[in-house]
Image 1 (cartoon, rainbow, N blue to C red):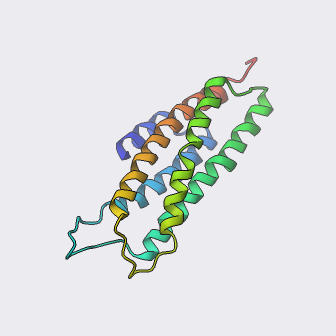
Image 2: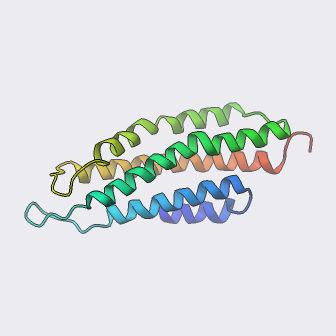
Image 3: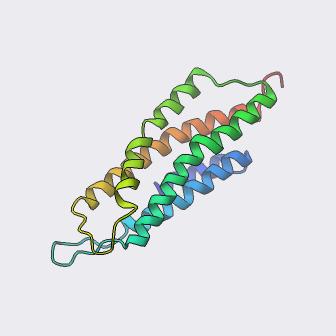
Length: 160
């Protein structure tokens, strides 16, 4: 995910403040995910889980990233499009719809782990964290396609 992020940042970073903001938010989420996923493997006897504060931080950043994408980023793009007379294509609408399908499962992870205590047993944590990583990867791939279309639309507005 990090190497793909670096490619996207090189390709689309600096083309628009909206896209730059989106990528910076994604970068922070990836860093925090890697911190959680980077905990050493464990067996039943030497189990090492993230602290409740680490899980709360990641859960909050996950919610913030999702909310920002659905509300702030989308609103910023729509505002730019309205100013230039551009309207979303069917491809953009379909991509956005596919992105929103990842929202509930990601929020479910956040809901499940945001209020745990340090002494709670988390038997499904590894599986759940892996699923979140896969969902984030899918979401980011869809967002990358959307970023490409948005970037092109903002760079060359209708009638230009």
